[in-house]
Amino acid sequence: MNDLAPLLTPEGRALLDAVRGTAPADELAVATRLRRDHPAPLVSAALAQARLRQRAVAKFGTEDADRMFFTPDGVEQSTRASVAAYRAARLKELGVTSVADLCCGIGGDAIALARAGIRVLAVDRDPATAATARANADALGLAGLIEVREADVTEVDTSGHDAVFVDP
Image (cartoon, helix red, strand yellow):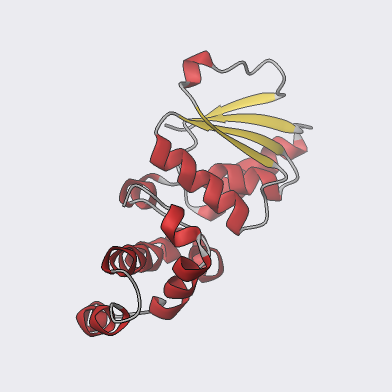
């Protein structure tokens, strides 16, 4: 799924809640039932996102994974929350107050940095990935600390930040 917008609507969020914890063996029955009242592509997107969220629990914990949004690559490539939190704490201890997170992916490191009280410019050139990072900042209540920008990182001015972080 490249477009998260339908899942960010009230109907999409309700479907995500409805399919939370759906076992793979039950997906067909759940999809059949939900397609009576919702568009098939939206039901499919919600079920795909639920599978990704289940996989992401190992990296982000249940509370965050159940609220976040993922891409298949994002689940695989994202930093484990405990590692990201450690790195963010180290930067905070060094007095860093703002970071340019280049190649931010779905925003795992940006989330940890923001939770440490650090302002973040999160940059990714892929539109779907940047949209996912933005949705995650919003979903976790961190949009005030995380600015997500879709751009080529070689064209981003990082001079206004205390540090630059890259974990491609």
